[in-house]
Length: 369
Image (cartoon, rainbow, N blue to C red; front, side, top):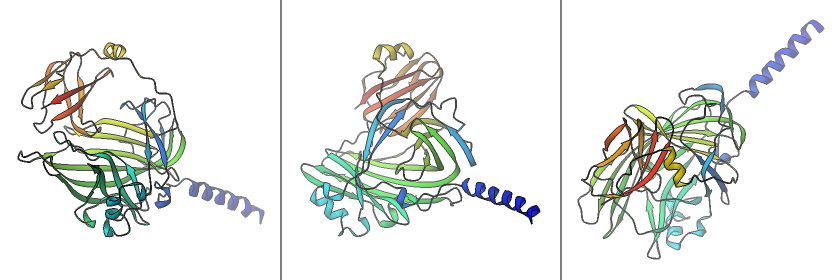
């Protein structure tokens, strides 16, 4: 009897260990809830030396991002619908039909350079069910009136997650479409294709702690159509964006999100954000920033057809974003005096972020009219 007992005990212990080492399964209980106030830190868009390449995938991974340092922080809040104007409660409340929302979060309306909507208090409405977590529309206040913006149909809502999410879950996708029109101001529509693919699971460490996670890679393909005032409209296909999101049980938002844009077939990191507690963020003075990244100043204002030139001391990656942080384009430029190939539709206030080959970063604003 004893001769069989120890092998059996060993077999059971191995079975228990194997069961423990499995991918988390994310469901609706791991999503945001009303009353959530979640602090997120943004780090410089450079992978720490301790982190493996983003291309590494598979089971039982170990990701060390413990050396991330915040350069800014924000708080993501989720509220009850009754905190919004009456017209928005009507559009997204119990009588909203397929647009009914279960929670709302202050957000920036999707922004496109050249179109500035005269709105305040922008929010995004979400619906959480047993099967998915999706965006059902946006809202804002225009001259004291709540303006709802819904997707064209339920089939064209932006499905952010489908449940459950684990390493063994298949890829899923959604197509979404909405449009905004404000008389006398302009028109904006956005067509999006979202593809989600779980590609790894394992242990993730950030400054916030250590978590068992499943990694979900999201591919976003966006096409905008925009018209300003009475000008004819034009279309703009944005660079392909990927979001690498590490999801854990009970955290309610990704523990870590790394966003990239695909430029000439190569991924360029544009943002690193992670769940965090309050930290004192050290701000580098303009003098020190200029010393780290000595660049000849770009023009602060330029007409849409005017060339924008940069004097680069080294080869650099130049990211162009709007004021909401949405990446419009990314360019790999060699050292020297270079022309920045800006799209004619990129008007309004643009943010240029220049990351040199030695890691130095410079940021400036450009107004195109």
